[in-house]
Image 1: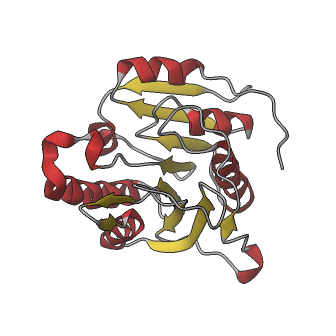
Image 2: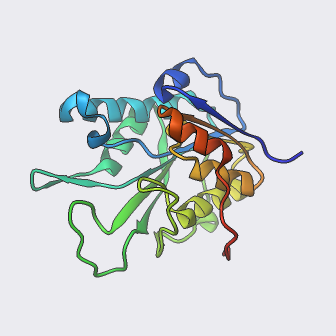
Length: 218
């Protein structure tokens, strides 16, 4: 059978709290930053971000993995380090970091404003562990094409999917903040069933039918 895709229009946090996830499920997502949820205020968003990171990790089976793609932002002249916030939440859930990669959003040496030229890719699990021989590059030189302004780049998604295929029992990829479904589409390309949750009904509809352009894949 072809890989399946389901997209639910709704609140990803509420869905996570009520979901039962088996051993073959892993979560790959990107949590929204404070500008996307202005009603919380910065301090409220920061607490929500850490709590939601912990919730994601806690809902998985011990052998499951949670992978986060996050881009830092500058606020009042200082950096908000989302990699730190995700790690803080994961630690509260008893999960350990399997790897932390840097993904280049712009060529090295490029000056950027507001957001850095890199993004974080972080992977956590409670029980799964990797041997040294299972390591792969710590710096991904290209983010890849983006299907919308806040998307995970395709090359980053493909690197995640290759890891899931080679090193985890994953058969279903879940993105509780799926946007227009980039990771879901890449998961399907790699043989995984995919489930997404998206608060915007318009984006959820796009995520149900997103098809990726043919491209050269490494």
